[in-house]
Image 1 (cartoon, rainbow, N blue to C red):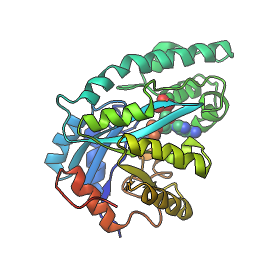
Image 2 (cartoon, rainbow, N blue to C red; image 1 turned 30 degrees about the horizontal axis):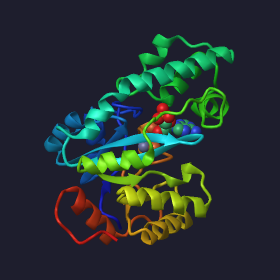
Image 3 (tube, rainbow, N blue to C red; image 1 turned 90 degrees about the vertical axis):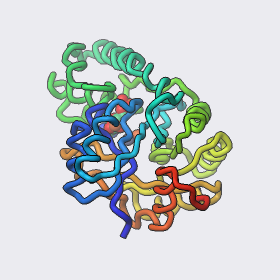
Image 4 (cartoon, helix red, strand yellow; image 1 turned 120 degrees about the vertical axis):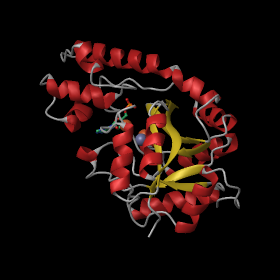
Length: 288
Ligand code: AMP
Ligand code: FE
Ligand code: FE
Ligand code: ZN
């Protein structure tokens, strides 16, 4: 059994359903000891989550999930930080609110041109923090343009769909270097979404490792055992740690990715402990 922790989850500071403090309470109810809040392109929820964590006895690690440039899509990097004060990556993501708003507006324009008009105000009010495609999906459903979120993503705003606009201007290697310069520890999130064949993925990971990548997110609840093993082997080939997280977005989506679950077989307990020690800033042997 893996220790009770989750290193990848979202709150209303981006596209999650629970406010940061409610997310921490939800984690406490499930006996999680450690939670990293990793909202898309922001650390704005972290202060609230940390104070809830102090109250409820949950260790809250500062984190974020950065979207980087990637042909035909985006590359997501989960970054855990020692602090949110005075680090370059925090200054950088502070600029991304405007970028995300402009990108969402560009998608609304495309949707309108395709015959699916939305009121911008209706999209914007759905986001408390960083605006993302789930907010657009909900607006599309409310306007009767899609039957549900899945339909909205499949037909309109998914990666291969006509109204999709990529988020993330920073190059992945620059993002990794920025995280490292900020004292952060970086993991390549859900590598499967890069849709690379094994050799290309190996080359991509080698490039990120040279820039200072620390880990591969090998363990997720929606990832079959053989894929987890493939990603552990990938990490080992490049001398990287492995990370585990649910990518939890909220109770209504918990059937896909429940908080605190890492799938089967899940992360090796020794490797989990080594990574957690590193995230806490405790010196330990290199995580392998
Ligand atoms: P964005 O960062 O705005 O591009 O939105 C990415 C987010 O959209 C992901 O973190 C998920 O929360 C959600 N998402 C991505 N693809 C899908 C999908 N096919 N169905 C439902 N939600 C999705
Ligand atoms: Fe998301
Ligand atoms: Fe992601
Ligand atoms: Zn995520």
